[in-house]
Length: 312
Figure (spheres, rainbow, N blue to C red):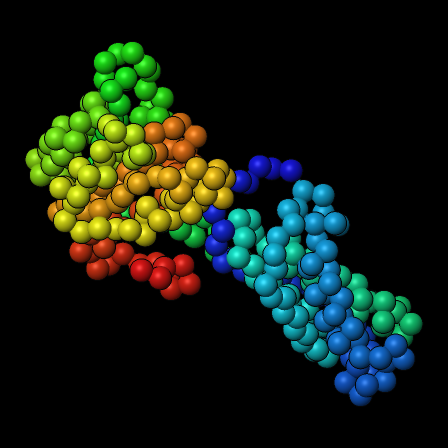
C-alpha cells in the first residue's frame, strides 16, 4: 500500500454510476412490483452501502477509511436502470473506489434479482462521475509568483559547527512549489537579530512569505516566539495550531512547540520546527492550502475558488 501519512484529512466525496440494460417488459415488472425476489432497488441499496464499507477487503490497495455517508439512487427508464452511488468521508485519501464498488455491487445485485426474467441483461458504463475534496482541489495558485525567504535560527549552524538540514528542506520545497526564494539566511538564536532580520524581509524586501526554522522550544536560547511578538502586527493562530495538531498525530512532542504565525504588512511569517522531520511534516500540511492566503492579503477580488473547498 502507498504511504499516505503525509496527507491531511479533508472532506472527500465521490459519485459513481452504473448502467443496466433491461427489456421493456422487465422495467414494467419492476414498476408493478412483480419481481419474484422482491424490490430490487431496496435490496441493491443495502448491498451498495455494505459494499462501500467493505471496499478495502475487496480491492487490495484501498486503505480502510471512516465512511460517513453512502447514498444510493436508482433511476428506472423504459429499457435501462441507472445506479448512482455517493460516498463521503473525512479522510486522508479519496473515496472514489468506495463509490465505484457501491455502484458495481448494487448493479450486480439488481442483475441477480432480474436474471430469471430477463436473459438479455447487460451491465454497462460503470464510471466515476465526480470526486472532490482532495489535495488537488486546494492546489490553485495565485495569479502572480510568491516571493519568499528562509530564515534559519541556530547557534550551531551560524557558528559553522553544524550543517543546516531543515533550512535546506524548506528552500527545496519552496522551489518545488514554484515560489521564488529571494533570501536564505542563517543567524544565531538571538532575539534582537531575529527581529532585525524579519523586519528587513517584511519592510525593505517586501516579501510575501517568510518561513523560519528553529528557536520554538523551551530552551534558554529559544526566543523565536518572543521575537515574533515584536514583529507581527496581526496574529494568524490557525496556521500554528494546525501545524501542532498535524504533528501531534505523528509525535507526542509536537505539543511542546511554541511556534507562531502572523502578518507584518503584507508579509506572512510562519515559524516551523527545528527538526528536519518536523519541517517536512509541516510543509506537507501548509502546501498547497496556504496559497489561498495571498490573494486575501493582496486584496485581490477576481480570484475564484469553489465554495465547497473554501471556507475563508
